[in-house]
Length: 110
Length: 144
Image (cartoon, rainbow over the protein chains, first blue to last red):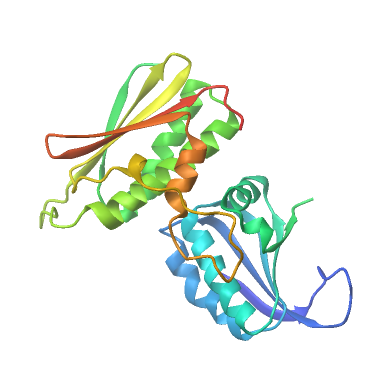
């Protein structure tokens, strides 16, 4: 269901050689699907320079945002970063409405 | 587009079918893609809230209660009426949540109704015959 891996981060434009934890989610992130992802996503709170690849996520409700906020808070407590990459327009609009763009690093899909 | 009504199990597992119904009605109405996305988000949030919070004490073992959705067109808007037989809860009267706070101040939860407010042209709640009745209107040409 998920693709969780630790790899050299090809999405890291600085190319500083730091290892990133890249996790790809897919489908719709709503109250039905989020419980299936949550334990894997929140386990990333122990990693460094976490990247969530949302390229295959077509939809996100507040249930998905809650999961991301929990992860972001736990990483922030350890001074670790979180980036959302390949974010599709409908998901970006939800992030925008929520005000999350003010404190999350978000890269839109090209 | 004629008025249509459909009943769904009042359970979270019915969410994909609820959203499928909303998407189909939006397609039939000819509303914009953006309007469809916003209505799907709004009704997702309201259905989920209803199942998670309004059901207290009204479960019927062996006979799950139904969630009814009606939909039609009126004055350039597509409308949806959501009915659940739960405890009275007026989402339109809830205070707005702050969305300007930083990460450390942000509380988890409360964004669902914020999305509804941002997504619909207008909404109205009433409690009638032991049921919450919430009606949403969305202008067909709405792209914001």
